[in-house]
Image (cartoon, rainbow, N blue to C red; front, side, top):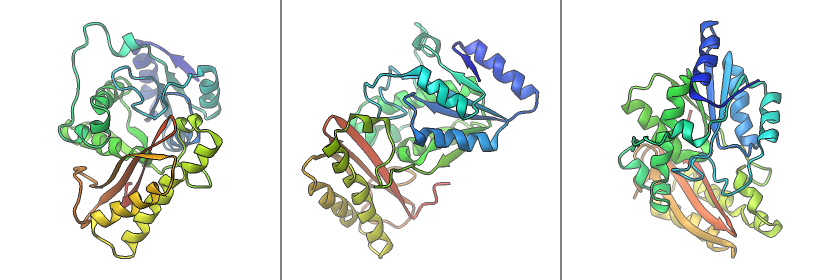
Length: 284
């Protein structure tokens, strides 16, 4: 595995692989790798001749690609995991590489970056779209791999790709969960033993909404109530938002009549956890 730090070095290294005929698959991360992120790497490895993984904490949108909080990044551990997963190129840029001193351009997907996570953390999703476009332009992949666990980010990136005529394929990979349903996230490391048990309420709430939908319930208000009722029963849970939104516009629905998403953001102790579940939507 080749580790590069500078933009020109990355482009030259990828060009050599592209000239040799390899397609390029790209997985953006913030480090602190867990099996959810590594599942994206494995999928990219199956489908491409060259796999590129980036590890970058975006200073303009903290916790953009994961809810990792302020955890310590262990590049030695992450690089060992990526090497074991047969990654070809790892991009470890510093802030000045992606945001030079005279950098002034920001990317906004109007409407989509202001809802849900954007409302709770203003500017967060504009940072996502900006750094994502920078990374895609540098890597020039044939395929971009993102996880379903970040559903709002998927909707935003898909719209950005469409609106800007970006010539690459977005590959959406399933959320990886522990046996009790908790979605894998670096934020889980912030949970104590009792908090870790309490955090399963997110999956329980989403499952309640999904089961109600599959039983014929179409009132979005009722589906939101089902989730809220489950979360309210967990003393350690503090709700940020509970949403049933259109899967394209992210507008809150009154009635589910097409592709939709059930989405949650919940505080458990120091950890802010997000999760989602598609309703009548084939995410692939």
